[in-house]
Length: 394
Ligand code: LCS
Image 1 (cartoon, rainbow, N blue to C red):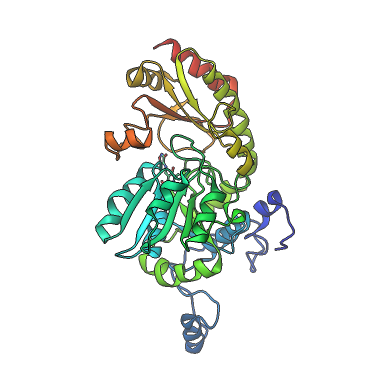
Image 2: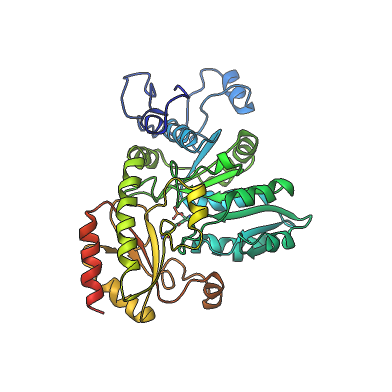
C-alpha cells in the first residue's frame, strides 16, 4: 500500500488491499488455521531460522491478525505492531520483556487500576524495583534514576483523572539516561496523539476501547521500531503466547475503519457534556483536558490533536450522591470500559480502581466521590438530558 495515503485513507485500505489473492474479497478473510503447510522440509527450516519470511504457526503470526497489525502500525507511525489478546497482555508482556530481576522502573503514579496493580504489586515479585512518581515533576524522576533503571512508563491522558503528561519531557529524560520509554496511548489513539513522532520507544493500546469502539471485543497492541519490536517478538511474544484470535482481529478491523469519525463525534458530544457538568451547581470539579479550566490545557493543546470523550467529575455530596447519580441514569449505561459508541458511567473507587488501597487512591488523587463518564455517539441532548434528570433525583 502506498505510504503517501493520508490517515483516513490508510485507515480504510492498509492491511486489506489485495489481502485475499484467491477470491479478491474486499474485507480481510478470517483464517482460523492454527498451522501452515510448508511446501518442502527445506522451506520449513528456512522459515524457522528466520532466513525466509512465511507463515509457520498462528501463535506467531496469522494472516488476519497480520492485516490488523499492518493497519495499526501505519496509523500509529510505527515500524511494527504486535496484536495481543488484551490491553493487559500487551502491558504485562512489554514490561516483562524489557525488565529483569535487579532492574528498576519509573512509572507515573496515576494509571489504569489493572496496570497499577501489575506494576506496583506484581513486578516486585520478580525482583524488579518500582518507583511511582509524578511524571510531570522532572526532579522527582531524576531523583529515582540510577544504574538499575531501565524503563519509564506512563499513560496520557491518565485513567481516570485525565491528567496530561508531558511526552516530550519524558522522551528527553529517557534518551539522556538510556531508558526505554513506554506510553499507554489508549486514551488518545491516532489521529489524536502520535507518541512515536515525539520519540517514544513503545506505544501500547487497549484496542478494547476507542479502536475497537463497539464494546464487543477485548484486545491490545504493542507498537514501535523494528529494533525494539523484532526482539520483543522473537524472544518474548512467541513464548509468553498473548496471541490475538483471528476472529478478534476481524472485529477490530471492522471497528477501526470508523475510528476517526467516531472520535470526532464523541469529542463533539464530550465538549457539550463537559461544559454542562462544569456549569452544574451539584458538580465540584470536572477533569477533561479539552476544558480551559484543566490545569494542563496548554500542554494538551500542544501535544494532542483532540481530547477524547472520557471525563471525570467530583460530585457534591461525595460517594453517596455519586451512587445515586449512577443508579438514576436511564439511557447512559452503568458499566466500566470506555471509548465505545454508547455512553458509559462508572465509579472508579469501587470499580476500575478498586484494586488500589484507599491510601494508594488518595496518593493518586482519585477521590471516593469521583465519577467517570465515557461519552458515546448518541444525541448530545439526550446524554445531557439523562444526566439532568439523574442529578434531580439526588
Ligand atoms: N490501558 C488503559 C488506559 C485502560 O483503560 C485499560 C482498561 C487497559 C489498559 C487494559 O486493557 P484491557 O486488557 O481491558 O483491554 N481499562 C478499563 C477501564 O477503565 N474500565 O474497564 C477496563
